[in-house]
Length: 434
Ligand code: AVJ
Ligand code: FE
Image (cartoon, rainbow, N blue to C red; front, side, top):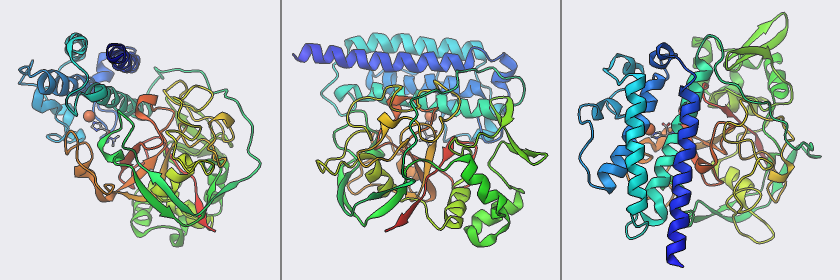
């Protein structure tokens, strides 16, 4: 009946919002006030900015734009508009303190739960299927990943812990998989909470290509370093070569060499770099250079999505590599259950029909592609989510990392960043022509 489906949508929206807030609290409650207000890297906001920005976006979209209410605190609105102040300047703003920020976000949330109970989840594009509630849950989860990046950059004693991954493990027999030529459906017009840049569904016809069964590992990446990869300009795009020279980059971010052994710092703990884990904290330029050294290339965004979603038996594109069912811990390393990727060869149940592994979760995967709109794109509900970032300066990442929640992860989900960025949870896999 319509009533019970509205109830199911309300429950889904409430659960997504609640899960995001549990995670936000886990990222901020164990942090003392000095650390919440400090800037741990010029690349990042103070954690207390993310906290109040989460509340402010929720107030803007749900209480002001949907419910038509007045601003709760008009004087703070400009402080939390991401386009008014670049991250590096945010610590100098008269931001809400930690206690005030928590109270503000909790007040907004209380009113939002009241609104959700009374609002019909249909009738306008913003409300249909509870879209705007789902969009705000995804926004909070994306900032939770941003805050986790700040934790990784932060110096000092660790405040976060999580069990190491111990997933089903069954190393694939083949290093690469052939994706046959032909059309497939990219993007979606059906996924109710998909964001504007994932829409609409459209057909792409691709030449055949080979793609790595699993993401490139630390051991494989170390062979590139050992072979002098960072000293050979021929492997590098010009701007990438310039960046590694200028900043004396010779390994992934957070790595250091001690007596011939590679160590890495991970959430405040320094440890040997594990051989069989997907490489993490590389820029697009590093991924591109490795691929060229290996005689291969990065997959295009369309190739990545075809490898992840196309089922040759039915000709359909599924929501995830394993089908249409929501992810479980047997499918993928998602949701910050662990603070690292699982070793390559994990999650056989998460493989695509063609046998490609670990496309979802573990590490974001750089693709060769610029972040561009799909044919028929329409900015929704605001230009500043995607449209203002379209163009050649941003490269697309796919698949999500261990730090991505499932509400913000699916075979169509698109992320993007500058090709120099490496503090993000980024890795890659490679491809080649037939
Ligand atoms: C999609 C991850 C690039 O963090 O800049 C958060 C998501 N947009 N608030 C970002 C986002 C507005 C965005 N990324
Ligand atoms: Fe934001």
